[in-house]
Image 1 (cartoon, rainbow, N blue to C red):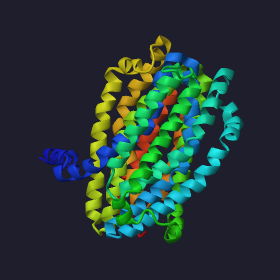
Image 2 (image 1 turned 135 degrees about the vertical axis):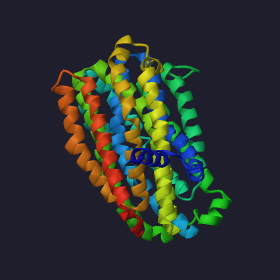
Image 3 (image 1 turned 90 degrees about the vertical axis):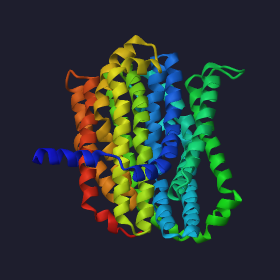
Length: 458
């Protein structure tokens, strides 16, 4: 009887609650679709460059990882913007939401401007570390240089997304993603292959297309924010004077996430550097696997963003138990969705690879690592959603410290040893994902269940 009772409790805990599911899904669905835009930029580049051969594919792949290691961490001002906006919105302080947005946009300009100006020098300085293959280094440096020109747009877009997620209007992220992705697809086709009268530019064309597409997204967010309804409700069109006192809180909340993301994406680059030492074909296969993998991860990222916004809003409304229930509902939704995607990795890996390339060598080398990743999807969902829920409550420092411990203490050593010091090669390097997600899921679950995040004041 005890076994049956335990089983019933387990099933009850795993079951979705319709009322909570609806609340999470209403926010999460547009966020998931919107989050896909940044991943789809890489997917489209990868799929089209895969038709040019292994070297362009490898070059864009490792340069793209390095680009995100530079630009994505500093876009973390969006986390502070989202957290403070959600808390003030939950309290009913709508004018302060607009002040937070203006402060976030000001910080985005201060951070993004120097990166854009220094793009050529940054690319030339770090381009040589991309690979030991001279052809990969040459193409990758060009790709990185042109992508960095779009980093300012990306940071601004993330701040806007943080604001609109905080006030619960996540549909704008989805609409922006439609413009961004559509523009990127059309320009990629034209500039990579020289269609519709455009020059044939290959890897260079892919980078230019992505940068322009991000700019289109910024134009959309500016236009939406300047509408009379938004200006009147959130005072979003006023100057920065009233927003100055929000700069320090945004920086305080965001700095740990900057460190976390530098470490996380730096670890991705270190992973690619290990794979580059294994071989160029392995590097090309890894670029495809990363692209596929990121599409799955975006399901959890979107649901985690919704969880963070809901946690912040409910804490602002002084309803911590509701915040906790919504966060766990987001975890369950993410785990089920990512498990479903993982089944595709397990049962039809070859078909998934064919979306990107028809090179039999690349497919043969990448098939087994992709199959293995299918089994880790649920753990990734738990780790990602709960880490963002803790960020939404304002506990960004713990998330950063946990990432530091897991990456430096477990993930990177396992990738290096299994990838380069054993016969496992590429399969061994990707096995590090099991260690990373298992550890992160356990640590985040433990911290969230403690409940200390419910009493954080912002």
